[in-house]
Length: 364
Ligand SMILES: Nc1nc2c(ncn2[C@@H]2O[C@H](COP(=O)(O)OP(=O)(O)OP(=O)(O)O)[C@@H](O)[C@H]2O)c(=O)[nH]1
Ligand SMILES: [Mg+2]
View (cartoon, rainbow, N blue to C red):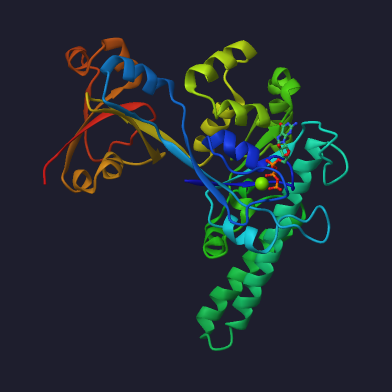
């Protein structure tokens, strides 16, 4: 799970990257970094905290999300930022995180001359869709070039693919990102080997100054309305403050947060959203050694989920003992849950749900 961070030059991408991953990448100076910054964030999960108190394990392991801070291109125009190498790096991501600037700082001029984060969202979406239109053009050129030696039936297939791509392109030109479409089978086939950026889930981090803290809910609502569509999400994050908090020892950080009087941080909301828009859920395992959250795509069967723990467990899968997190906490232990009948035996067909506490039985 890799999420690519994008946004206009100077919007605060590297600052937010540092906040999300507790990283120490150098912000400022127009993409000081020549290569991408890559870092990992732990997905906050209150259930893990509660299970850790219950089991007192040697180790607690959170699910993780990887963030990639892709350096933007400085083009001829101030607004050019998405081109060439940046596009090919982003094509490998599972989702995009767009950072837009809403903090005010007279010492740092905005590349478009004024602070207007909703305009920046619209511009970025336009630029992403424009990049996709070019990617489709190139794909169609290549398909056309390869037509000649094909047999009639193959040629017809390729022509169908080109027609579908043209349709996608027309929609992009009309402002509809690929993610907002109901995808047909022929869409899926045509998209298989052209990785379009607007097909990826899109998150927006509105980078506010400290005065944005009180407005977070309103900002998020406004961003949400603007994005509409499925596979999108938004959080207001005070980038600079969060990047500083991320460098503090945990106790000091907690004290500072309490002092600020804010509820859950935008940062936590963003990490959770990142996890959700990619379509991941967590199942949990417990024990004296380790309490752990395991990320799996929604819809995974029990044996496939078991394969994430170890391939042997998938191969030798017998059954899974499953209790929901709530039922386990209510019972206080697996043994008590078993007595109460809330611990169930599930077979190969069982679809793992978010918050399932699972013990796999297997033999190899
Ligand atoms: N006052 C204030 N300054 C910020 C905030 N977030 C970022 N900055 C500053 O804005 C400048 C640009 O931030 P970066 O994080 O480097 O932005 P970026 O998007 O990575 O920039 P490029 O990689 O050059 O495109 C830096 O000087 C940051 O310290 C904020 O919330 N408040
Ligand atoms: Mg940067």
